Image (cartoon, rainbow, N blue to C red):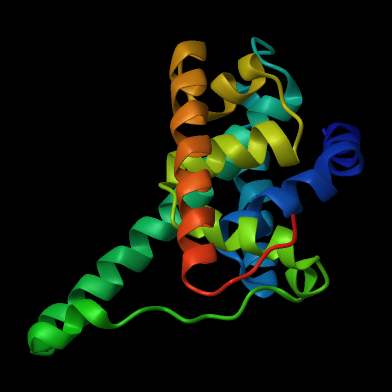
Length: 179
């Protein structure tokens, strides 16, 4: 079993970490979630039947770990919001968490794309990250996300439209990109 995990780590660790950091935008949190992925992988090793590739199996686990994290955060946020009477201003409170240090070195256009990705749904972000950053095929993306291939295509199409609109909105809001 150890050689299997050593091989998984060697082949996919960098891609796995990159996927999760794009989703959560925090290096320390991404490191913690990657560890959670490896723990779940270890615990579910016996259930891996080889119907999908090791990579899609691992990324599927990563997606579930990340979604579980987001769900827990939403529940915590809801408890806090329910505890305080925020009034009408509560809806205006936005998370201004900084981008990870890796993003700071990207050129302005990539930073704009990265910010625009924040405005997409989790499914749209997942498809874009897997397809264009991780270079997965439509079939691999479908296996990771548990979608049909047509749902991946539809989600990708909608995500691209949303990204385009979000980038246009950023331009109108004063973020200038060079042509």
